[in-house]
Structure formats: C-alpha cells, structure tokens
Length: 289
Image (tube, rainbow, N blue to C red; front, side):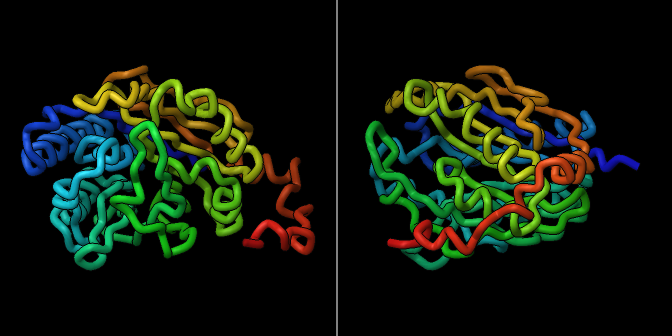
C-alpha cells in the first residue's frame, strides 16, 4: 500500500505595516496563519510547513534591537503552545519557524516540529547565518545553530528542516539524508534578482542527490520601508527524481498542497545507489577549516 502524504506549504504576505509595532505585527501574522493552517487542513493536508520567521516581517533587512522583542522560548513560548493545540485540533504535523530565545541575548533562527497529536518533537536551529548586502544582516539577530541535523519521526514519516540560506550548503542536505529524512522542508525568505536563479536548481538537486522529497517555502510580497527586493513566493514540492509536483503563486498569499508517495524513495534508491557508493574515506578535506 502506497505511503501517500498530502503536504501543505504556506506562503503569506505581511499583513501589517512595519511601523505598526512589534506586538501588533506579530499577532496579526499569527492570526492570519491560524486561518491558513485551517484552510490547508480542510484541503486534506497531513503535514504543513510555514515560511521562515512566519510571524513578522523579514526584519533582518535592518539592524535594530527592537526586533529582539520577537523572540520566544521553545517549546514553552506562546506560539509553540498555540501550534501544538492547532496540530492536535486539525490532526496535522506542523513545522513552525520561530525566532527563538535560548537565554537573554542568545537567539536562534529555529523551526519546531510538532506531531499530529500535538506533541512537540524537537527543533532545528539554522546552521548557516548570512550577513551581507542587500539587507540580509542575520548575524545581528542569530547565533549559528548548534543542534546538528535532526530528523523527526512523525505520524506521516521522517521529517527534517533546513532553513533558507542553509540550502546553499550541500553538506547539511546530505547529512539529513544520511540521518533518514524522507521529507525535508526549507522555509525561506529570498528575493528576486539575488538568488532566484538558484531557487529551482539547488533544492531539486538536493532531492535527487539525497533521494528524498523537498518542500521549499518562500515568503511573498515586498516589505516597506526596506524594499530589499520582491519576496517572490513560488513555493513548491519536489520529488526524489527532481520533479516539481506542485507550485505556489508568485508574490501573493498561497497554500500549496500536493500528494507525496514516500514509497517512491525506495524505488529511486534501488535504481540509483548513491548512498551505497559513497566514499567517505576520501572526503576528509570537506571538513577541513
């Protein structure tokens, strides 16, 4: 019997001006996503991933300590608790990117994984942190992740997360495959004119090289006053053969839903024996400083 998992990706425009204040923006975006999660569940989604830093703007476009007010503890912060309730209510697995406080002044770009019975399973902290123009000043806000490349056993299968800039580094994508991932989500905030030409190149390549499914989520819209570029959306689901199975709209709200047959992973790996034919004994220089 096929292991078909209906998978949802949510991309959502900012619904309050940046000048509205941190708490007002955060609450408005949470309310918006509560409704969109319900819509995804109504369409039969069994697992849903939200976009990077889903409850705010992409505030890394500037360096301002006021955005530290966005941080929450995980799992005992209010947003993770709410998402646990929603996961249980809708009986869906949720992947929820949150600006995480570990200790005062120690913050991470993190995503929680919550099972369909509302159980918090764990988190992934973004490993690779950019700090570059135009407007990607992430080292001002985040420490590099220090929890490795976990894979979470959920009711729908083995789920993992790789956040935004991480996708440019194939080593972590391979680690997730070796750790048993069947479905890897990459919640992102990326703009046209910078890396759009890589958007449908890198992640299908990761899917093919590591023979798992990928859910790539990008926020949509243009965020004032920074206007660092158009967050173009076009979130998509990709198969282990590198095929785009479903794709979202450009630049606007959308819920992308597609059916993934996880048994396809075994079929592909029985043809292309990439994991069998690896030569880790020759790769020492890959981890040299």
